[in-house]
Image (cartoon, rainbow, N blue to C red; front, side, top):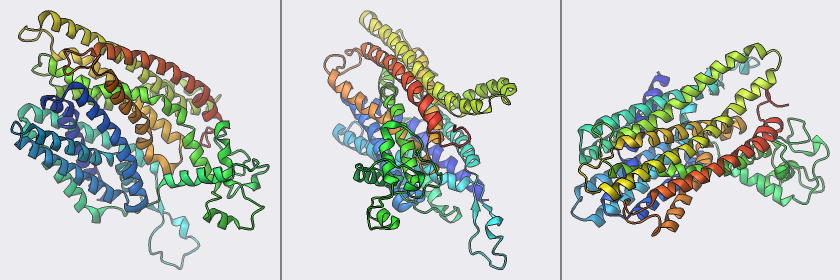
Length: 550
């Protein structure tokens, strides 16, 4: 009963978010241009909003972990989203009467919707993992307490199974919301879509909130970022100490090793955070309370996270490419002859469908490839395990970055043709180029997003501690979010030369060419990182999975 209810709540929330994204959020660029905002200003506003989304994701995830728990954070952020949609409904009432009022309400709606979206990944992931697990009584825990009746059963949890179920239902719910928005866009005007969007989000928020008594209780578990701060502080305070000479020099060293994994030279100084100071008159517990000592497990958790930094350095350029999908792609579609079938909502549906289906196609192809390797399993089982758990994900990310180069080149060719037609046949009615020309670039950017995002998620979850798994989206999106801020800075810098008030007066083709060149350089850098760090050092010396460690 509880599982079925959680499925319904999950589908409702994710479907409503997906509906809003495709019906309204993806079209913010279109709305700003219609309100008379210059192309550079509208682009910067959308890019900054996408960057602020990352900051809000971190803040809400930490507040949920440290103070409120996921349930309250989800209710608050979803209510914020609904209130933002109410403001957008009011903006539609004033449409055409006071453009300044509409613009102010639109910007307020963007801020509130950003807060609403921020809880979608980390908080829902943590909440649903706790709700969808198999809660089974652990009878072994009470074998020595036969005469006692426990007040609350111990729980044995299968998190791997819950993660598979969460991903499956999330993709189904997202597809339902996206398809619904496309159907609604075809039969309703903008004001009706706004009313329906507010109703859907408000109903989803109310339904989720009223189901509190049916959920498995969630409580604040403490922010992992506090652990990161404590480790960095303790290591800095004890930077003058020598490295440990024997395993007993460490505090709570359950592994019994001298080198704390992952053993990467540049962050080895963090090991000092777990070294016991024998010269101090304080006990180990007192040193821990004073912030001068942390357990070995906490040091390893932080080192596992910091070991991913070289991988994240390659993501800002990837974020630059993704930023074009919600800004310039939308403006391009408005400048072409509208196809009766391929509206902008349908184009976003194509992009979203490709993003969702790519992980399934990847898993199918990889599983077929694995069957061919089965005869080798008895010869090199460790090699096969490493290949499956680590290197396939790395190659998937590399393919995604390579596809971003193709996406930029295709977009450049399409824009070059459009600008040539503007110069030669600008007065032609209808414009001799339809939105069908944009299908390849929407398809490619969906392919890029599906390959890189899913590959990053798998790579992150393999290499970090279980307590940090629901921070996958904030950490990965933060690196990508840097690219969104870079996009805003780049557009601001090129404003007046490559970017003017309208698309027809701008040189978007040159910008796409620049992104293609940057993506090519980024691919070379990523391949170096993959080989020199992630492929060798992290996977051999620092894998948190004991089955694949050597």
